[in-house]
Image (tube, rainbow, N blue to C red; front, side, top):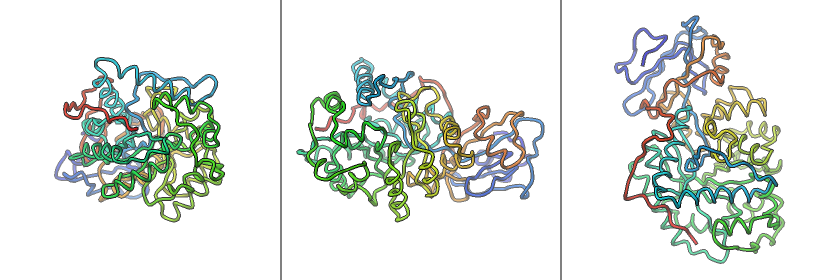
Length: 473
């Protein structure tokens, strides 16, 4: 790739280096007129910068910025539909979830349902990659998702989603077999890891999760990815106010489970108290809690305490989804508190079905600009959350998230218009987030990716792995 600043290539192979007017390593100071080189394994080996304090050589034209690849810590790529599902007019979350389920069930009955599912996953992955995301933390029920995302070119964690609200049935054998089958889908996919997603704790019992983890302790999931504290309806369900939960279970599972017996064994004002009481948290198992929009001040303090004690837990902040569906999000004071605890907060986008703008949903910079407007966060903090913060939360912060020797070359080259200030280091950081700055190239593990915005992107089609995971009773 041509460079606006480099006249000679300091590395022996031209396809393993890139130069930019500004390199933003995230960990370390911005560097002007810098070339980054990597080896054939995709590991960054050299960073050659101009003298400290120098300005970009380019004048009067477009400039380039090189950043680490962005990390999206909460996605549902199989829900990449070209439209959204509006919030329930009465504000009942279970009604909205039932609409999502109905949409998925409707398309699953069509003759080409499997092909459509694969295309949606590929389209979502392509949309994410084309906006600068190189790593995702996805939730799926499709065995083909890992292979599809590998073909698209993404790195990340893919978690198998399951539901098990019944308390009187803890036969873990079918659950364990299904998860182990899912893990087999990651063979020969070194950039992807297998996680587990008990969707949420209003439709998965803590006892069932702990039993599954015990059964899989010889080959545990990379992380646990669950929805916690998304909205006030969840708190109502925790406090034994059905408020549509029975109807939701009837839609999802074909039966009503009724009151959960040990909800009433102790008072649980909040979800983290409930999970602590049942021995789920804190844990040495890595956890990503999606949303956290209605977590209390006490719960945020507890999360910070757990992080300081070395427990790997974090929250994926999905601001636009929370505001669209529930008209609220994590309070600014709790965001500011979380920012003081490294790796506690990251940025997620949720699914296009839960976004006011489906075509922009998977764009982390769009999400970051919303965070900037709502919370007043500076561009530098948002870049950290979208790179280092996400990588740490996913347990791969020693591999990606910064442009440093020894890290993998997951990188994005951005092009800044001539009329956007980009002369100083601070201007370069702010220009990264500017809406007129466009993506020029993406590398994952040192490989230049072929980008496509088409919803008809080709998919990896494997006849032997077409089956969806079986329903678990």
